[in-house]
Amino acid sequence: MKTTSILSTLASVIAVANAGCFDGGDGWGPQDVAMATARQACNQLAGTYGPAGSPSGLKGVCKDANGKRLEFQIFHLDDGSRQLSAEECFTGLEKEVGGCDNGGDTSSESWRFKADPNSGSCPK
Image 1 (spheres, one colour):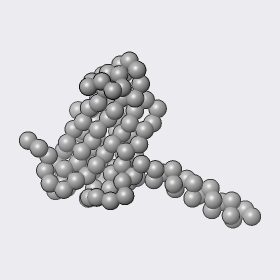
Image 2 (spheres, one colour; image 1 turned 30 degrees about the horizontal axis):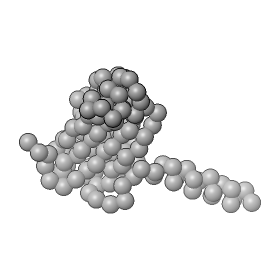
Image 3 (cartoon, helix red, strand yellow; image 1 turned 90 degrees about the horizontal axis):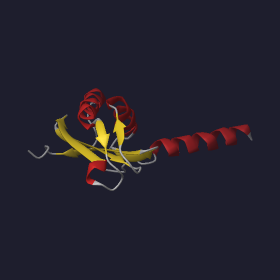
Image 4 (cartoon, one colour; image 1 turned 90 degrees about the vertical axis):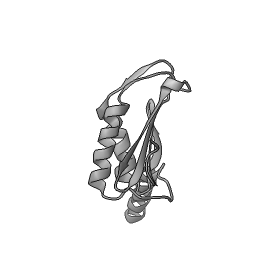
């Protein structure tokens, strides 16, 4: 009985960890480069966000790395304005980069984090 309970709990944890991961598409390539690129993106994405649904409630950036375009977006989900630090941004995006082979899209507290590797280069 304990084995069944442990396996059931483990399956639930894995399902939650993978929730929001994209099923297909391009992969990140070397993880160290993808993580460093996410950190660079967060330096640009940090700042004040407006209310959910407003143009200022969303920010995105595209970075060329690993021979791909790595797209990162942050959505503010609450009313009013809120500050997002580069570290809080990276904490959200690193889950999508490190935990999802093809990128992902998850929400946490006041924020939605989306990270998506694609073929090609960022638009100029």
